[in-house]
Image (cartoon, rainbow, N blue to C red; front, side, top):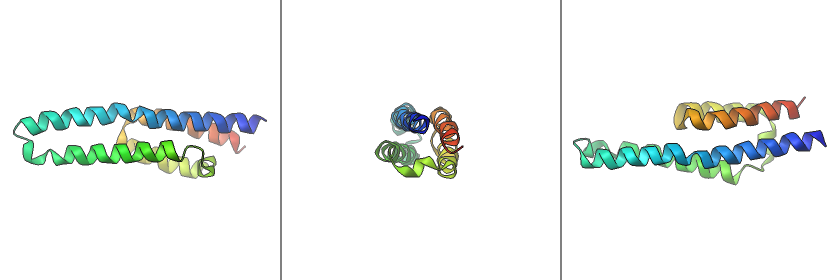
Length: 107
């Protein structure tokens, strides 16, 4: 019973972090808008590339939140590192909370 509670919390935090990806994605979209109107216009595709990475990451999180893969702490560690390096620190926080619930689940 208690393991199911921790698994539900893990799923909740993963979904929450997937939806939270909208914040950095909107920021990168704003940077793209500014860059395309200024002298950075020829390098503005880099902002779109980062936006694409964040959107694909969010879709991946939302689609696979119920997957049994997220019951292993090692997989969540990889997800945390990727989110910290490539997405945003804001998205890292709920994934860390999901990681702590996953560790409690595997005790």
